[in-house]
Image: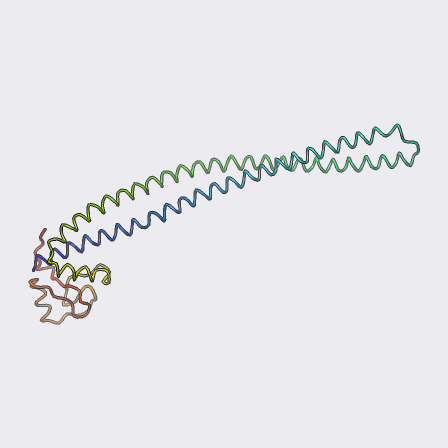
Length: 240
């Protein structure tokens, strides 16, 4: 029975290794999704500054046309000067020309502001593109590392699961079924050491006579409190 205890201890160690890798593997898709989120955020930021540049450029084109039309309007008004007959008409014409010229001046101010926006947006795009390229390279490196980790975990799991199957085949069927039934509910601690007349699974005291029997490691004994299988490390002969 000591051999069966050894096999169960080894099996439990393997199951813990499997569970650890499975939990680690579950995290990888989440991390990949987070990377995709970073990539999308970078793209969205770049799109935003590009749209700002396009809006400023369109605004400038529109105001350039407005200025051109305003200039033409001034020239057209001035061309009417020879046809003026009275001082009143002349004063009115000058006032109209002044009004259009003031409008044109406001348009020129708008154009200057839009040119500043264009320059600022162009600089922001250069910076955003540089950041995006650096971050894209970092993301690609991290994604590659995660994919390599995934492949490594898959390979390790395949190897460990083969070892587990070989080991499980050596455990008595009823004992294996009993172990497997309790593994999940006992958080991977089905077989535990008895130490100082206490169960290291639930930390409750073991009756003295029962502890004496546990120390022999000659039979399958369970904790009367938590039903975990007990063994005594000091007298257990390790085997492979």
